[in-house]
Amino acid sequence: MDGLDIEIISSSESRPTRSPTENRQAPIAAPDGHARSARALGWFTLGIGVAELAAPGAVAALVGAGGNRRQRHILRALGLREVVAGIGILARPQSSRWRWSRVAGDVMHLAFLRAAGRSRRANRQRLWMAAGMVAGVTALDTLASLRARRPSGENDAGEGAAPSPLVAVSEAISVNRPISEVFAFWRDFENLPQFMQNLESVEVIDSRRSHWRAKGPGGQAVEWQADITDERQDELISWRSRPGAEVANAGTVRFSPAPGNRGTEIHVQLEYRPPAGRLGAAVAWLLGKEPGQTVRADLRRLKQVLEIGEVMKSDTSIHRGRHPAQPSNKRQRRQMDMDAIELLKSQHREVEELFAKIEKARSNNSKAKLFDQLADDLAIHAAIEEHHFYPSVKERRTEELLHESLEEHLEIKRALADLLETAVDDETFDAKIKVLKEKVQQHVKEEESDLFPKVKKIFGQDELTMIASEMAAEQAELEAEGEPRKLVPGETERPATI
Image (cartoon, rainbow, N blue to C red; front, top):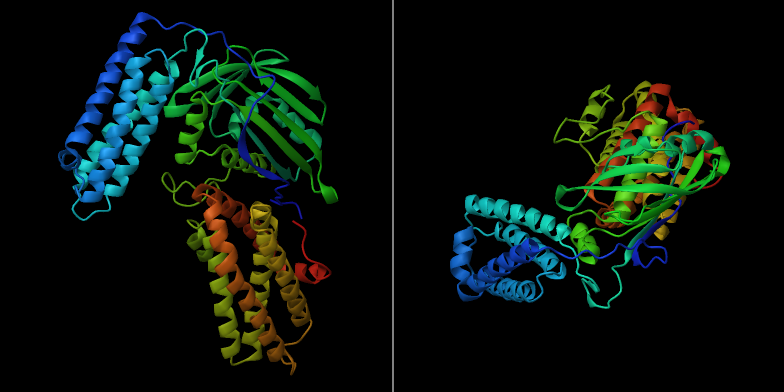
């Protein structure tokens, strides 16, 4: 069936790595104005640190925190850290290392304010004001750190230290489209912002060179030029940023036929050095911008663009429900704001209700209609779980649980296929329904107690919502085609492949 048949081929966590071909920039000496601003920042940092060390209770009251003993201890620790950072900035005003330490301190202060908001004694109005001020200072500190330049021979780690490591990401996905179509879409770099969330624009300069503009730390625009370094029609595209780029980066995307004539496998390898170096990568992770997760989400959007024609959105802060698709029935409207796990759980509950109704049915006619609905629901549930949810969590520390779930799906399909060939007035029908119900209950129990909690810890909310949009799209397609239960008898030979 042509549809959103997703398969995550491989997934590796982002990791620091040193690239032998990394772009290096000539050091630029900082002007006198830069040194003066650094000294002012150093004294400002010292002032904050001394205040938190000397009067943590007063500082806590000023920002609206409760001011309990634990909060005072935390503020003293933060104050000591600010004092050290202030001294570092004053001692080495040309270095960006101590400036980035201020950004880390800002993040810690934001975390302190968030935790303080849980206290009953907190003044939430003051906390919100303080958090807004700290967030503004964080943005300014980030901007100042990005603009800071190293003097000759010096880098953030000190005299003679090695450059900051690159961050490497490797991800893959399958798309139900021909290789030639997928390659052509990617080769036109101006298409990339359609699915790369942090990429604002790509301007093609000539056949090999392009100009890129992306969102950097603190919302600042980051721009660079890149050259295509290798290209093989319908096989691969490699690119690398030109010398002097604000973000040294390189990447390769490979295209290969997916097994079983299921379209194209896309393998992406990307490496880059964040403007903030190692600290920037850590802050990005703390803010939910883990690069591996970002690339996975980008590839999902690419899949939707190529297979559907546009990204299906689930941004409830802008619209209620997914767009542009509109819910065609009450159940779909109820599912609009669910993430993947919530959607699957809601289907579990619906199936449980149908089993209960079948047991209470007073006529064979009513029982037959309820069973047809049950069979359709089970077929849809298995399809969207096997095509989207399971592949998404494959090789994410859930392999053993997935094998168990697929075996349980096979047993349920076999029991369901047997029932589809059994008339409701047959003397064995009720017994077979009972067996099917027990298999489904066991499957639901294991998923909700083992698999779902583990997946919840691995995936962010945005990622789960995007998976839900893909599942909902296929569900709507299966319902539109009618009688999805007819697919079951052909899927009873062996477990589904993900």
